[in-house]
Image: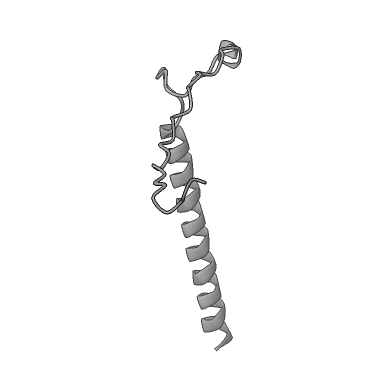
Amino acid sequence: MPARRSFRLALAAAAAIAVSAAVILLNLALLGYAQPRNDPVGKLSPRAAFLPAPTSRPVPIPRPAHEHADEQDD
Protein backbone atom coordinates (compact mmCIF):
# COMPACT_ATOMS: atom_id res chain seq x y z
CA MET A 1 0.00 0.00 0.00
CA PRO A 2 2.83 2.54 0.55
CA ALA A 3 3.66 2.41 -3.18
CA ARG A 4 0.10 3.35 -4.09
CA ARG A 5 0.16 6.20 -1.59
CA SER A 6 3.44 7.58 -2.91
CA PHE A 7 2.11 7.27 -6.49
CA ARG A 8 -0.95 9.35 -5.55
CA LEU A 9 1.26 11.90 -3.83
CA ALA A 10 3.53 12.12 -6.88
CA LEU A 11 0.51 12.42 -9.17
CA ALA A 12 -0.94 15.21 -7.03
CA ALA A 13 2.41 17.03 -7.00
CA ALA A 14 2.72 16.70 -10.78
CA ALA A 15 -0.81 18.04 -11.22
CA ALA A 16 -0.07 21.00 -8.93
CA ILE A 17 3.12 21.77 -10.85
CA ALA A 18 1.29 21.55 -14.18
CA VAL A 19 -1.48 23.89 -12.99
CA SER A 20 1.08 26.35 -11.59
CA ALA A 21 3.03 26.34 -14.84
CA ALA A 22 -0.16 26.92 -16.83
CA VAL A 23 -1.13 29.86 -14.62
CA ILE A 24 2.34 31.41 -14.91
CA LEU A 25 2.37 31.02 -18.70
CA LEU A 26 -1.11 32.51 -18.98
CA ASN A 27 -0.07 35.50 -16.86
CA LEU A 28 3.02 36.05 -18.99
CA ALA A 29 0.94 35.85 -22.16
CA LEU A 30 -1.56 38.37 -20.81
CA LEU A 31 1.22 40.71 -19.68
CA GLY A 32 2.75 40.54 -23.13
CA TYR A 33 -0.60 41.34 -24.70
CA ALA A 34 -1.15 44.31 -22.37
CA GLN A 35 2.13 46.06 -23.18
CA PRO A 36 1.70 49.74 -23.99
CA ARG A 37 1.40 50.67 -27.61
CA ASN A 38 1.57 54.02 -29.33
CA ASP A 39 -1.96 54.90 -28.34
CA PRO A 40 -2.24 58.44 -26.95
CA VAL A 41 -4.81 57.37 -24.37
CA GLY A 42 -3.54 57.74 -20.83
CA LYS A 43 -0.35 59.59 -21.69
CA LEU A 44 0.17 62.65 -19.54
CA SER A 45 2.74 65.34 -19.98
CA PRO A 46 4.27 67.52 -17.27
CA ARG A 47 2.54 70.47 -18.93
CA ALA A 48 -0.83 69.08 -17.84
CA ALA A 49 -0.04 69.97 -14.21
CA PHE A 50 0.32 73.67 -15.08
CA LEU A 51 -2.91 74.10 -16.96
CA PRO A 52 -5.55 75.98 -14.97
CA ALA A 53 -8.60 74.05 -13.97
CA PRO A 54 -11.69 74.93 -15.96
CA THR A 55 -13.75 77.46 -14.09
CA SER A 56 -17.44 77.01 -13.89
CA ARG A 57 -19.96 79.27 -12.32
CA PRO A 58 -22.25 77.77 -9.72
CA VAL A 59 -25.69 76.96 -10.96
CA PRO A 60 -28.26 79.33 -9.46
CA ILE A 61 -30.60 77.58 -7.08
CA PRO A 62 -34.23 78.52 -7.57
CA ARG A 63 -35.69 79.95 -4.40
CA PRO A 64 -39.20 78.96 -3.40
CA ALA A 65 -41.81 81.65 -3.81
CA HIS A 66 -42.87 82.96 -0.41
CA GLU A 67 -46.56 83.44 0.01
CA HIS A 68 -47.41 85.97 2.68
CA ALA A 69 -51.10 85.18 2.84
CA ASP A 70 -50.84 83.91 6.43
CA GLU A 71 -48.86 86.89 7.69
CA GLN A 72 -50.52 90.15 8.57
CA ASP A 73 -48.72 93.45 8.24
CA ASP A 74 -49.07 95.72 11.28
